Image (tube, rainbow, N blue to C red; front, top):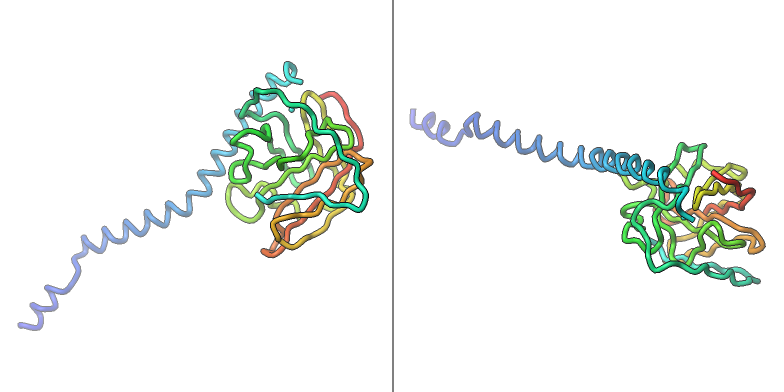
Amino acid sequence: MQRKKEYNKKRISPSVVAIIGAILTLTGGFFISYNYIQSKKVVAYDYMANIFYESNKENKDIAEQISETTETREETPVEEESDTYTDEYIGYLIIPKINLQKGFVDKRSTENDVEKNIMIVEGSNYPDVEKGNFIIAGHSGTGWKAFFNDLYQLTIGDAAYVTYKGKKYTYTITNIYKQQKTGKIAIYRNYDKTTLTLVTCTNNDDTTQTVYIAELQSVEAE
């Protein structure tokens, strides 16, 4: 009888077990739903930003430290920028093959960050600079901010588009290569061409990054 009383004292009551189970369930649910909620926030933001961009584009004229190396190079003039800028999208990167349509902001904006968007790399040119290089970096992998997760599906000859200041820039991918993650990436391109460069972590490889070079083919009004 005494042993039975001791057992009853040590046994956890069903109500306590239920409370612990509920806490564990809620904690697990939070982590599972976080990425889903964040992805929905991005979709909603993109939707509203696209409406703003479409309604105002007629009235507008649009990580990793990256370095460019080449044996012979002529410097591309850096365009002058106004003292004012917006945190709203100033253009879009569109790659039909992987169903990517993602806006980008002014490179001086605090929203120009791979933790928030695709990012215009500091020192790159905007698409309207002749013989310039428009460099965009983005996350791949998992989670709501992995905007470049499907870039690995691209091959030479695939098309990419950029809309900026009421014009549509059409590019064709001409080179794809990998480099070790060392804090810098050498960009090998034809400096007689106007180019778009995309940079992201290599699919299923934590030690390298992949660089996609695309050359401008045409420019037309949107």
